[in-house]
Amino acid sequence: MFTDLTAWLSYIEQSNPDQMHLGLDHLRPIADLLAVVQFDRPVITVAGTNGKGSTIAALESFLLVAKQRVGSYTSPHLLHFNERIKINGQPVGDAQLCAAFSVVEQARKGQWLTYFEWATLAALWIFKQAELDVLLLEVGLGGRLDAVNLVENNISIITGIDYDHQDWLGSTLDEIAREKAGIFKIGQIALCGQRNAPAIIQQRAVELQLDFFDRQQFGYQKNESHWDWWGKNASGSDICYLALPHHTVPFSNLAVAIQALQFILPSISQSLIVQGLQRLSLLGRLQRLPIQKNVVVDVAHNPQSIAYLVKWLQQQSYQKLYLVMGVLADKDDAAMLQWLLPYVDVWFVAQLSSARALPVAQLQQRLIDVGAQSVQSYSSLIAAYQQAYATAGAEDLVLVCGSFYAVAPILTLCGADGK
Image 1 (spheres, rainbow, N blue to C red):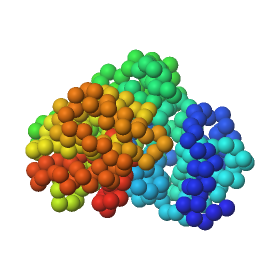
Image 2 (cartoon, rainbow, N blue to C red; image 1 turned 135 degrees about the vertical axis):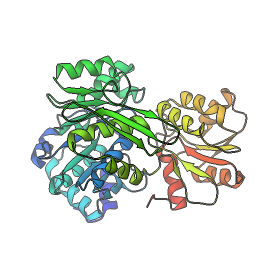
Image 3 (cartoon, one colour; image 1 turned 45 degrees about the vertical axis):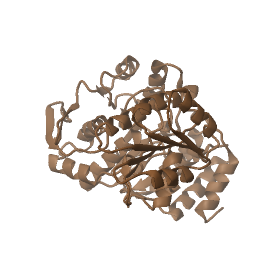
């Protein structure tokens, strides 16, 4: 139909503008026709409120240093759509995506699909054509009714549960946990990365007769210069890796990734774990830009991820913090602002280029209402960042956060694509 990726993405966006749909019934016939429901290789599905992308990135890094061929599917992307679908850590090419979209177009037979469903089916078809050893799939916002849950997996990971997307997943943590636990498959392996997994998740694991692991069976110990991991090997015996190098990825996400790894590569050595940590990098996650002044970007966009960002800030040394921020209207901006308020010297708030963006005037007023002393507003993220950068001194920190839509234009501006 099209031979240009931009044309395909425009076609997909225009065919279902600003619409979201949870459910699998309309997708199953298409997935069956594409033969992307079952794979003859291990499949790890990752759900959770935060940490899905970093958990998959950690798994990918460990598997690649162990010479495994890995396919990974994540969302959203920061700079290019291709980032969502990777083979051996590299985004797939435009030609592969165009071919995949053509196949999906034929298979859907006029069935309406969301943007995410298009992407998911295309990713699965690409992976089906590749010679892979392991498949890593990130769930979108849900679990039970998410398009990724079409695939029969071997290992399910729930990184953790917190409030987010309540309009879709429920207003209580139990309701959210129940939706996330929908990725569990009968008789397989399931892990939860948070301490004391919610009772709903544990109950579902028992009902489905899963081998279930939470932070009672594995965990970590932080030290000033290193950290230690402990857990279970594939046969159920205790195992540990000592004196691992620190990383900006949350320890809980690294810990659950290493535990999952035991069931895929039981013989993986500590030296390979260290190598995996050393090569692990994430675009837009506590990423320090390679420019003259001290600039860090982070896609933290809900209270839990902002709380982790604040913990990182507490360990940094700087004179003043200049915060560049834009948020989406469906996020709990009040809680996010409360976390950041004690640390920010000057706020540079901006209008994001998304139909879902919170109007910058509202964001500015909310900051004033909670007692922020110095708030400047801008019509664009670039304008806000440029003013913050011009204002900052050599000992100051410029931090960009609040949304993927906030970080992406700064990475583009600075040419900091992580490569």
